[in-house]
Length: 569
View: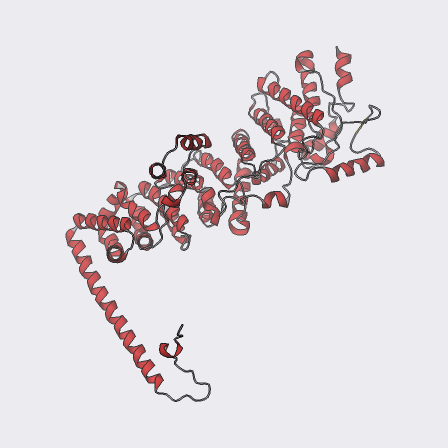
């Protein structure tokens, strides 16, 4: 039995000597690709050779690197001999067999060609599944060589640089091309098993954190974070779960993880504005923020001011808006005094020319105003309602009735199965539109359906906001009244006009004396502005008349009247 087992193992010894262990402790993953050896079987003889052999071997290795996929780490691809199953060896040898199987899975393949190395790919897949079952069983504590081998295998299979053509075809975080289909990695069937194996390994009770932190180190975490830029949403979902478990298990790495994610956000906001994994990283931070102790450290407040608030600036805000809004609300719930800081930040980054982002900002403002206290509200109410007034006067309107049912359903926060079910049932356009309205008030999806003015006026449907306004009506009404009057007189949209009249009526019932005072002030201001405009017009007419009587001499500018420039068609 033992002879059969040892004959199946690679010739390299599974146990690390002291010098190799010392090297691995100092930098185990910094030289993963250079130190990882791949067992290759010669086609003519069955002789085993490592990647670092003679010149002919290195030549073949270089040739293999040139022909392998750009997405995956290059390595020599050769026939793989399957190892014996765990059930056929005694417990004392199972950890050695685990290391052997993990080393076997360090061989990588080119998955862009499905007809290439089919047998070897299948053997590797079966080995990975066997490793996954062994780790999930939790039958033995992992030794240090096993932890090192596992980290090396995950690094070889997962850590890769995405080529420019692979990245350029992505929708770059959901900017203007939200409907583009994501690119799916052809190697995903193998990668998914490796990710599942890494997740089970990290969360296993048999893993000694004190030993594992030497190998799941800063370098490993940085390479893991780089993978969040993958265009494959399935990979980003796996990475999100794994990084969250790493953050929970390795407390010593928590400050470094927060700092590294902050650096990704800085680069995204102030340099590239291109990254596929911002939503997933924010989702991780949302759960991290919930665990912050009170009172909040200054480090966390700086993160809010310098990272989360500026994340409202990029054009691709829509792809991560809900996760960002959740993080900000977590901060406000932890420390209500931060509400005024957030509102001032939103006003700073307010999207003047992007109506969809304006609706998103208004939705987030409504959530903040529901949680704000009176003191913080009074700090920001003047600039806040000045901006809301500008939104009420907005002429933007987007007609959703021209959309197809399929397009309307894409705006819903529901899964694909629900969308296809609705399509099969044959719901009408109007019914789906009503469904979206019920789902989407105050959210990103709402921004695709309603005008800015209508969304701003919907703030008065919130009892908490109306209560804040009522207690501060002496300040708010003089700011907002001229806006309401202009809308009531001139706005072209009937829905906005009706909402404006309802808000006017609400203010009138709230304080009729103040309402009439603001109305008289508005009339006086209108009369004054009309008089100023008339005087300006008369002044220009006098200037034109005086200029028309001046003789033309030299390079003197000539006043050209509309009559002399009219073109008869």
